[in-house]
Image (cartoon, rainbow, N blue to C red; front, side, top):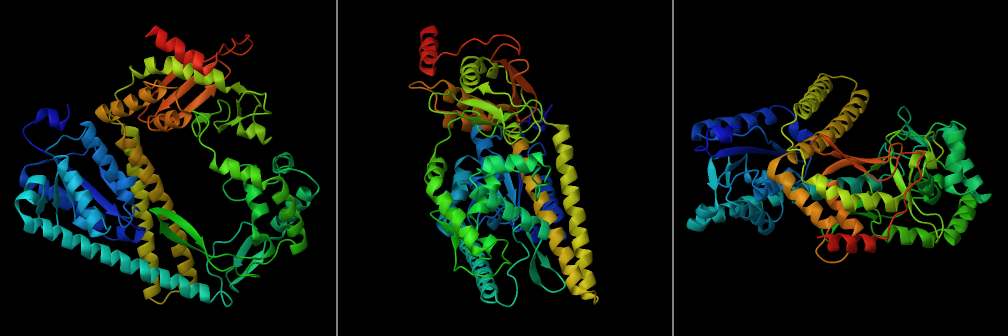
Amino acid sequence: MSPAASLPDKPQAYSYLRFSTPEQMKGDSFRRQTKMAEDYAARKGLILNDTFTFHDLGVSGFRGDNVASGMLGYFKEAVQSGEVPAGSYLLVESLDRISRQNARRAQRVLEDIADLGITVVTLIDGREYSKESMERDPIELIMSILQFMRANEESATKARRLKEAWAAKRDRLDKQPLTSRVPAWITLNRDTNVLELIPERAAVIERIFADTLKGLGSNAIAAALNEEGVKPWGRASYWQRSYLAKVLASEAVIGNFTPQTLEYIEGKRTRVPQGKVEGYFPAAISKELWAEVHALSQGKQAKARGRQASAPVSSMLARLATCPLCGGTMTRVTKGARSSPKFVCIRAKRKAGCRYKIVSVAEVEEALILRLPERLRDAPAGDRNPVMDQQISNVEGEIEGLQTGLHTLLAAIQKGGEAVSILQRVRAIEGEIGERLGQLRKLEAERASVSGQTVQARISRLMTAIRPEEGEPQPAAVNLALRAVFKRVTIDYRYGELVFEWLHGGEVELPYALPEGTKAVSSKPLHVLIKALRNRS
């Protein structure tokens, strides 16, 4: 039995913590804020709910990311669906944890939460902000605006100083590298602080360009590298066409570097190129070879790439379809104007070791439209998942351990340790902390979408997308709604089944074709299916 069911007379309280950078999690801040929330709830007779924890770790409030795509946005959604009851309390250290946007937008975030029937409490001073209190006391409203103004100015000042620091680094590019992040075929020599080629990787770069000039496409080159067992770079497990296309388009192979700055244009993070620096990297190929290949690719491929870049989502299972053998992505392919779309394992397509088996997109989407809505009505409730709780706890422990190691290294510098080598280790640890924070955000986002009314609201949106009141289902709308409910969809062609894996745990299976070895039934056109469904209803 939940706390709300056993003590219905006591309001619920929910703790919300936000840190925009790993450094803000150093020391005692996380534990201190959690303790403040526990003390306030006990003092006011509130039930501090531990079923939902809303933490935005590594998310900036300056641009409103915590509301647009973070856990504060999930909190609002849970209130709207009824998962978090109206009359509850949201506990934050201070108002700048909610937003650091300009005062007008930040105040709107606070008012939106208050209008949902939630009281926001700032633990640092014990102030309570509710719809009634802000309407009753104009001074309270003014105080909140002043706090938002101060927080926004602090963030704007930090952003300006950081931008100036990077500009100063770019001005010294002729004396030292801007950063240790370099293309995969180059390394930074820590002893001399000079960028150097990795010979065996530079040879692969030259081969890619030479083979392209011979008329081989990126798919063929990637397949040849995979067949020969040439180990890919970075985290990839096999060579992919998309990576080769980036290499072929990059001027870094001839030594050119174009620094970029991150700017927010019309609310979107956009990389803005700065002036090109020639000779910044050691060249892996000659400028003549690059120019020949670049001219060839411009003539044959540039126009097609443009169309693909702007094309809408064409598959209902985009980013969801999974191979039953290797667990990798299944991609949608079409061979010629008269050919119907098919799903195929991307590893098999790249000749990277899996079975090449094509599956009709029409058969899969027919099953999805005809049979999935009935299965959605029997969706599991999605109760609290102890395994996910343990995963979150483990990642939090890893972050804490990394932070302890970071403090130890910084203390060593203060005691006169070798600064250069220690700073290298500090950067490595900071990178690991960033990766763990990303894992933590993903896990908490999954847990936030686990149960009750919130899940049912998303399922309702999915059913509407699959069977709209007017017109045919739109692949992009169905895909978006599917990804809010399911983690992946395995197209198990061996048994003719689609296996949908819920975000909150469990699976649902749908037949889409006869098992392998049996003659398949031809699929009907989509508009015929829609007409049959409406006639049936």
